[in-house]
Length: 131
Ligand code: TYD
Image (cartoon, rainbow, N blue to C red):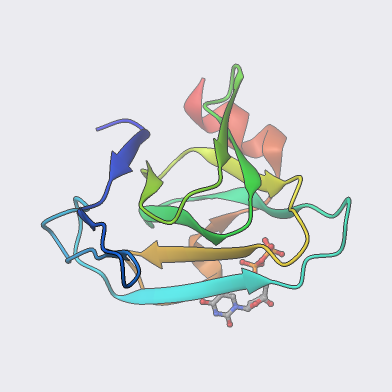
């Protein structure tokens, strides 16, 4: 399965809206971990690497930012700015986050526990593996 936008269920309500996601139901993997990226200073970029195994789902819970995915050949940009959809990112894709708005909040839902050995941090090495 390749990277793609996944829209979550939404219950629009005069009292406020509600969305949710369930492991293996709305996203195509079992959730082992979630983490947040927040208070990103203007102009900063995060998450420039690929994962050997980790699959993930990335949502702009608040504010906006761009998710850039590279398959070794070209960049694809997703501009995220809603809490009811996100992008599924399979393993072995280079990705980074940039262009964070003030007070933006990024939620990453991951298929693995944290493991530094799962990271590929050298883009040339990544490109050599995938192309
Ligand atoms: P990292 O994924 O390297 O972020 P970035 O690519 O944006 O620099 O994570 C930064 C630090 O946070 C790293 O030293 C390890 C730690 N970390 C954890 O301990 N657990 C986690 O689940 C994550 C995502 C990071």
